[in-house]
Image (cartoon, one colour):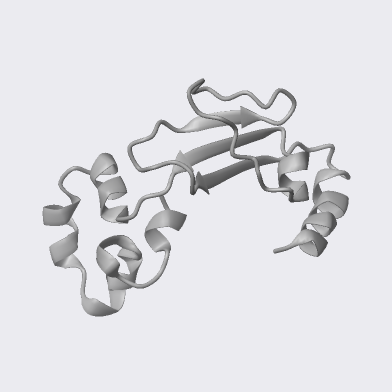
Amino acid sequence: GGEEAWSSMYQHLLDVNCADLGLVIGSSTMNSSATPRIVTSTTSTTTNENESSSSSSSSSLYERAKIVFEFPEYEEWADALDLLHTNWRTDVLPRLRQPCASALGPALGMPGTSVINFM
């Protein structure tokens, strides 16, 4: 990433297609029990009035985005999986063999980011 890559994305993808940019990001300022919020770049308001906008990033991504959806970062991604599939620990976990265990990363301290990518 970085500004050079993002500038190229604006020029070769968004601008030529008259497309809007939306960001779905984890917020380091929210705890895992916080309510997800939507920040609109034009109004800087949030869906949760008790929280201020965390668009403290000065990157052009935030400036260009029409909408930013912030969600809480989990310290343990197994907690997020519990919300999606309440029985995954008994239905899925026992069936995974070691080479495939990274499919659950970073849940339960396993390597990788597959769980985050495919949620």
